[in-house]
Length: 273
View (cartoon, rainbow, N blue to C red):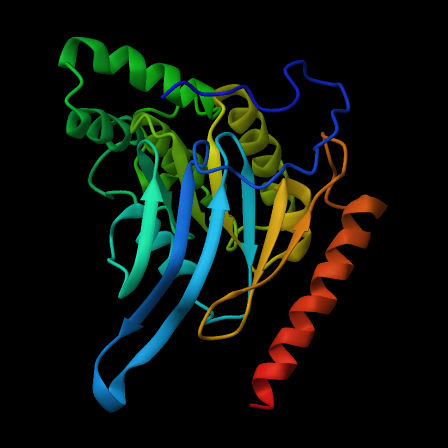
């Protein structure tokens, strides 16, 4: 699949993040059509998602927010192919890679070994893997850490390794499930910058699940608010804020406040059901 260039080819320039039109039948990278997911059967059945419709176009950064238990992680698992929908269709163009809140590295492997494993699983020849591992670790600013074990790294560094491993899968669609949720504010801010730069450079489509509404406004082209369980799309907010953005900027704060109002309304509505 040819990958489009995302906004902002030259660093340092403020580039408008346009309100993108809805993807057409031809150009959606991810499409969920009337997707429902129910776990269990009979009286024990739990509906996680209910007839959800969601699309992302190639190169788009879509953030998904919602209350705990609204089906955000289930949705990513469906897109990744780890779960199958109870009803509806999930369509994905290209390869997917999934990142979790925990880096989920193999503790007995080195940093290089964790990244190399993803290349091996792709069938990359041994003669090519060493240089690719070096290049990938350089991409996420981990030069000089190839021989370290995961327990020797900070939380932010472990997530950088997980990001390099995701890129080693040569994915077109990057699925991120609260990847920075356990990190301190400063580390998270640095990783926002790095993720945004890599997304723009590689033209990835990103589905990013977060509880942090400011984070969604900082990173996304669109913010999708899900209802409380079962998850449906309650509202979509376009993010018309120039890049690069800062999480503390007034524009980001204003949008985050509006999304929070909608999210709070949704949570209160569910509480009174």
